[in-house]
Figure 1 (cartoon, each protein chain N blue to C red):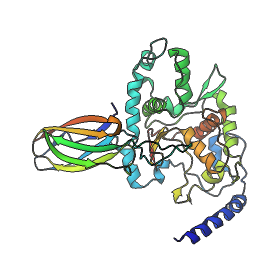
Figure 2 (figure 1 turned 120 degrees about the vertical axis):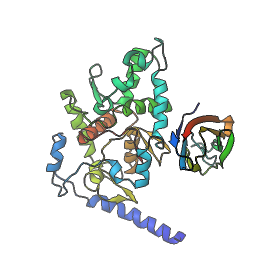
Figure 3 (figure 1 turned 180 degrees about the vertical axis):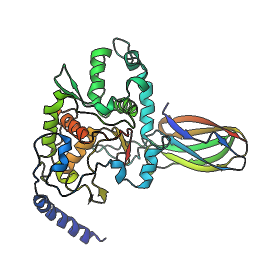
Length: 106
Length: 279
């Protein structure tokens, strides 16, 4: 599976605003480029990213061809309880990848 | 900008370039390859050794400094897997001979390109990986700039992060450092520019909005935002050679390795930053 890098604080205080960062390895081929012989390079991008916390979706993004290779997504959330973040990337050609990270909220 | 004025500007630029190139004076470069002699050149600029990092915007630097934001780490992670993967007729992984890369590969990238006794010339990290694959794993070479090769070299180079560059100390390398030095100062291409015309004489200026740096290869293989990928120093060199409208050497050409070696001796003592990020 394509490697991903997740950055979530291991510990937080209840009510803290935490930053969540997710970097996924992907070429994000736009589908607009052509080879030297003129053939269109088929589109191969991530189309959807989502983050669930303890089973509840807290963040979702649709991705489009203008987004760079190896998309880096960063967003904030309020720490309410200890638990597990689950990340999922879905894309063209059946691309699917997951990652997870745990946080302890005191 | 209107189309007409854009064309006019382009024509002006084209007309100006050969003139500009001709105007840049040759300097009295010493023929000895000792990097410390660089300050003694006719240049009025005192040369402080600066990494490409110091020319970057704070945003780009922030990407490089955060291992969970630096896309080069994706290759390094892949490389760690490949390090342990058995391959070839001997069913050997890199780790079977070299053990834990975190110990055995410490400082290795900082002293490459290194002299290979069998070949009688320097080899860079890419060539060393392929020599190992041929001699010890008995398997096929990995292609230049392939995901696997970039991943392995990124993982190996990562183990030397923060360590000072020591390449070129081997006495047997001296003639090759000298060759690299000559290549660096040789004018080439339709623009008739040498590497030195930009990277020694004009490193404090800009070229089309981009900083011209001092050509210290401190972070390779590195993630270039422009490439949207990790790339080797040879890719960078070929890009520059293409930029002065010369015919780039093929990947793995001895000229490129000699240039790599010379550039590393120029950067002697500077800390390695691989896998770095550049704009």
